[in-house]
Image 1 (tube, helix red, strand yellow):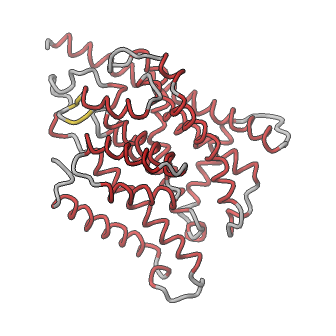
Image 2: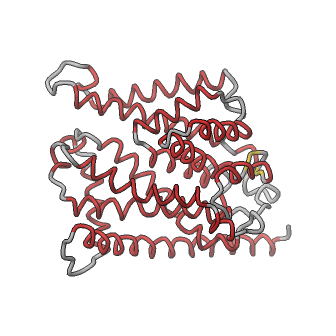
Image 3: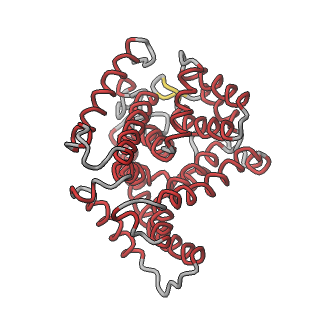
Length: 356
């Protein structure tokens, strides 16, 4: 590659980044505006004006308050902080609908989107369940969480969840199909640095499909999805996958897991679908040796969210003045999480689950 070609390539990347940042800023403002509008309709509250900047600033202040000791002791703060950071980092994925027509993955067949009811139904269910999930969390919560009105809860929900939900729909659009099984089967056709490129975005879809069929008590379908996952993950038995299903089903950490996997896809999977042109390896911008397996980071954050949930749940059922060691010092739980992750990661590596 000549100097002029390299310069042109870098200029294209630069303008792509600028375009994405401008688009992201507009989408954040639109999400805030749309969220307040819809929330006003849902709760029958009058909204005389829509100030996206005020909503965003309020959200940032609320997040910063979580580092305060008194606020950090609330029930779901640890999970919400992890969740918020996940959504903030993954927010650029909302540009996928714009980039989908220029996808580097080949021809798209949007006709299949219209005729596949499974994927469409799954997305509708997710859209319906997320507001209910947060509304349930708001009932009976202590301290500051209990003081939140339903209006504020819905507003906070819609202005933070919407980018993640849009990103899920974007994955379907980028693949040109809502057929979950077909998406999973496509992974072998494209690789980046020897790793499945599409596989980076398949995993959240696979997990969601498993959750969906488990909730509908269709365990035969769940097993069929697991079998398809095994084709690209390799070496994972049904028992371990079913454990993940139980974690996702009973801990309600779907948003954290999805966000973690999408983060890995974008930042550790060769820039994901946004910047990858098929030539990054060849010109030396990204070395194939620098790729990190998607499954490792996703499992790491899955275990972290699960442990956080267990500890926070223990804080509710254990008396406030108990001598239980987890309640004494706040950093104890983070030390335990790190220790558990270190132990389990070493075990997984020794058993050959992670291929370096």
